[in-house]
Image 1 (cartoon, rainbow, N blue to C red):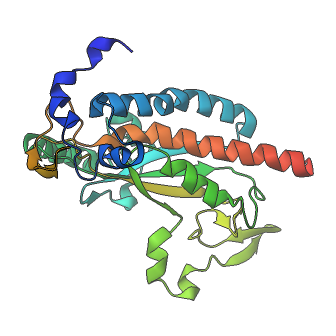
Image 2: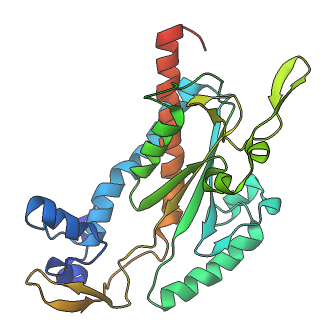
Image 3: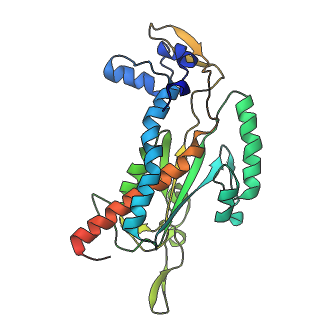
Length: 278
């Protein structure tokens, strides 16, 4: 990556201001000192392998999983504005810069993020990954659960603060009979009548769509001043200048797809090694 991409002067104050809720604060506690490279440099250095690997991982996983498996991602919420799920259209994702399946909401997000940027702030986001055509039987019931490995992989993406599978946290508001994915026979096959489990039961894939969502926090590198403490123990304020995305969650969509693809491919290879099936 060209060195001219970085502007260290934009982060000169970060050298002495371990901003609260930034990695610099905890890495100072862990290593005893902070390496001054700039938050933008850190984000690129740590995020670049994920971004570059996304295409390679998806290509490799596609060969392992076969053409019958499709893994697609979409941005389903920015800030307090979720999409209208009744308007979901995968084709719309190609027509806007937000990976948004709701064309009307994409226009609203554009105005919202412009307002957030001009206000010197940032916004969080929620990304949803859907894997279709995944065979039943991938995963393990205890230590290497499929949903556990998916959650771990998605949590390794920079700025991710939460992961849910299927109905996720919303399942806590449901009754048992509402959350249960009931089954019936259709043309000699067992079919589920819902997919609150997100395609995974007991750590093992059911053959339904695997649905995972992850939340990306609003970046703390913003123009608005934030209270912090410098390395000498003085209470100060910091305002981060330079080039910063008002919503870093947008760029996480292809990375999330790649993470899910790699986990599924890994579990399929394990399944083949153990059983010889698939």
